[in-house]
Image (cartoon, rainbow, N blue to C red):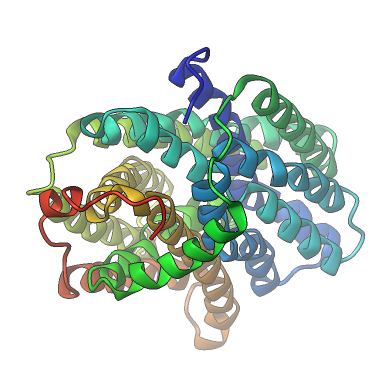
Length: 412
């Protein structure tokens, strides 16, 4: 828990600096795609794997990050691994082979792994439950400043210096975020014997997966955020350049507009949260509407319409705020860290899988005589529909009031 000498809002803003850099790194591949393809001769499938490597390493560590947060606290967890972000981005910046590019992405993904999870758990522990959706939505919006960095500013830096300079600049910003967290975030020291707590936390994940509603939550989490990130973080720039001849800076301008709407969408949905009674209906409706917009882009209706559809997808992506609120209400407080970790792991594992699979779809499209981006956008929409059906058809959580009434325990 936080020290009374520090405002929860101040500490949250400082923690969000790490999330901001995580947002920048996970979307950098989209704007970096053309120069990387030029310098390394990457195929679409290799480009997809490059983007996915960050998310694979990010997602694979979420369970351990959740344990670390529950046992050691948000600050100690994020401060321990964030330096790997600095190292990974430098490895990428000075890479001279494709395996080095992948290695840099993996290190960066590990360093960013707890970035938003620590913010979510911090909010759950330091703000009233009825304000969770609104505060979490605001945090998502503030952290989306990282998306602005990988729009026009990064495109300008690439065109006027190099793509390597972009990774060096992001490395420097990550180092500043790490120092700020060390200096300004305070928390109490754990009072329990930590090795025993780690073992108890491991057993707690088994308890989570025994709850029948966990699979439905994970089913949609795998594809909801992945759909937006596959567009914004990988395929937007190549699509606009190859379909319509946009310049890199022009696509950066579109990325900026998409990012701004993303910043608005998260807090907007936090404010509009209808509560537990109707929240899951809203989530399902937003997921299906987003899939419909992707199918619209697949039809190649024209540059202006496609940019408009991409902007609408960005605004709708804010319904992820409702998914976080759904997770918080679906589990008792003693399981918050691990429940959020599993949800976050599913989200980013989904991003990695979708970016990797859509890279394969793009490579295979020409042999099937299908336009590359039509196949990719239709594939993303199809994945999202599948996730929505899992969310709808698998068991839903039971009564939240009963869950909150469970006796609190220090370990599961």
